[in-house]
Length: 230
Ligand SMILES: [Fe+2]
Image 1 (cartoon, rainbow, N blue to C red):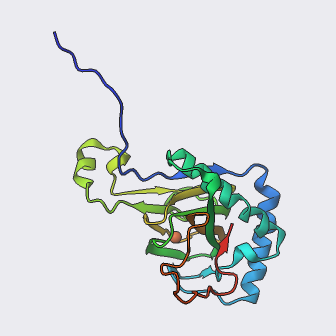
Image 2 (spheres, helix red, strand yellow; image 1 turned 180 degrees about the vertical axis):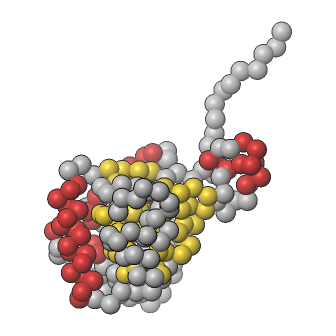
Image 3 (cartoon, helix red, strand yellow; image 1 turned 45 degrees about the horizontal axis):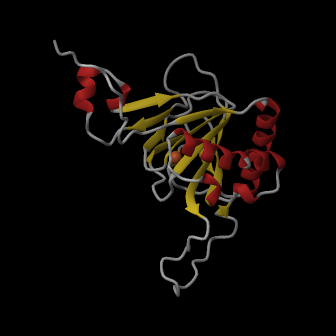
């Protein structure tokens, strides 16, 4: 009599979100928080997805001299390499370099980020420096949205593989890394405490690969300190 046996599962077109934790992060986070507040005093922020009382620093965090910023920046390439490994990327990571940028978000009460992607890049990350504790509600949660329109499958199967959206509230000291094309937003901060995160974007680029699409094309001038090769 015939039987059917399981072989394997192929997670085709998956949407991997990889989570990290930084050990002994308390002192580091205090340092980064004070560096972030000083930067805010010195610089006008930029207006992108940030709304309400939400300061988005200029890009260029990775080129700044502050020790906290510099320490956390050194973890981005490590997280990117681990991400590639975790998703089973068939590349020799040692032959790659990364183009990356990073910035600070400070969301005070009412601050939030409307829905957006970081689509030009390959992967994006958020490190949680300060995440106010809340007893209930969605304050400070990041929400990822499924743009694949398979929500009707979720309605019957109740599996996150097909959920229309998934929210999470990583703790201070944690970092999440996700595909830059993934739609996401951040719920308003309902607490009196500020919420501080460091966000980054990264492109994997094979070393020696020309960065200009045409050999004789004029060089594209990057804004000072905005994007770094790491
Ligand atoms: Fe974002």
